[in-house]
Image (cartoon, rainbow, N blue to C red; front, side, top):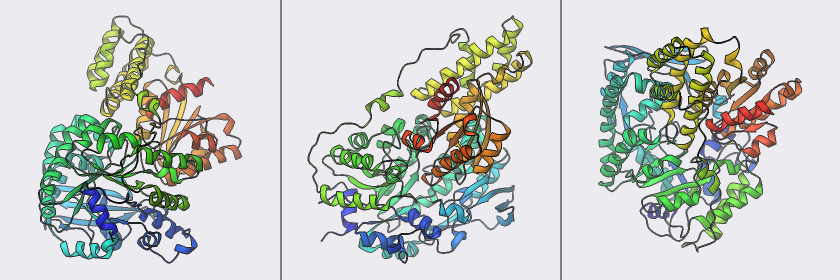
Length: 637
């Protein structure tokens, strides 16, 4: 009888098997519910692996394993610089003897200082029990390790002097616990796919990274070369290891890891890992969780063997049929069932059933496919839906699948990003301002505005037909994929420098004519890049924006609305576990008689129009460009 491990490995090698494997990740669901005391009664004494075995599902164990931390918090002590120290890993690392690490606790934060011969750098953050109950596993970083230009060389010194050595026995013991019940994916150097990706994910924060990528390119290139020394050391250990499957890199989004960046900074390292590890008979998977719409060909041609955690429509713009059609010739697909379908607040039972019906029609003949929940089973999942997925695969997942009447779920959505737009009035007249904004040349832009003012051009005209009109075009170019997030952020920064010149010449109150927006990420959620981008683009087209930050408590939102009040309250959530906070905030607005005074718009990867309607929001926007359009519509309503 074929075991789970054998069947999965056969699929990963491109072979046709008897039935599509079903490999749901239960670890984060189990951790959140175990801590919250909300596990189903029959599972109270069981681990997440025991539950999967009892249901007849294959196990999928990953290193790093954030649930089975043998030494506890010490395993993720250096998480803020992207380093983990798990007993199950194929390798271990240590700092060189001339680096001293000092730990401090202040106001609930853990401060870690790294003292080197070149100076001291530090990080601040932590992982609370409340965050674990919400399904978080990595904690949060309040202060990133690079805070000033001088820090680049210090961090480079730390990484180029890391010592790396094998830990094969620890990994083999972990693999033995899994046995034939599933597979173990051994992690690469970090959760990033390349040195520059590591810098983006860990050292600066996404928004600040894009500014630094332009302003301090030389320092960043030198740092990436030093981080590459560490990556190479780990790669050599992995080449000699007994592992069958290596997980290299994670989380690709066509906004953050936009196509030119991916091609230049990420794809070469994915190709290197695929070639070198593949030559040793190992399979390489990469964790593709994110919006892959603009990266489809780049990921397909990256040289890895498995695309793991693929997250299709309705959580992203790419349908499961599109993934299968475009990737099947070069990649094994792992995932395919968006976690939002397991949530009652995001998908009705009819919508869940419709997705499963479409799934089996979309992936004919069904080879090179491992079904799982992307990214993982969420804490508030309707567990019966997970069971029903397993049952349907057992009944309908016998291979090869027969051809059916496949229809893409949303062809209109996939074409919408390429829709043409009409340039605003004044677009051609002030085209040079737009080009300077896209290039991020704030000083030159400010000088050009001074020239226009000196020549008699009205400040209000420069603002309306120049800067704001340019930002509208930039917003549309961003939505269509013609420009990327760095250009948007740099344009906004340049625009602010231009506004500093215009402000003394503008009539009082003109800057606020579009309306006042308060924006924030709800409590328990530490993601900020989407929120930041929405705030930048709203500000760029004339709204006054007050950014309340991340992890904002419901009571704080209410306090700000009472003191404001804003025209629009914009709420962001990127975790399924934090979506209920949006409903809570709207309910509190109702209770305090504030709901009629403010319009509420919501957004974030797990949020959709159904959820927005159900909680009583005034609108939902799937991305920053649509958020600008929605905000304008809400003001007119």
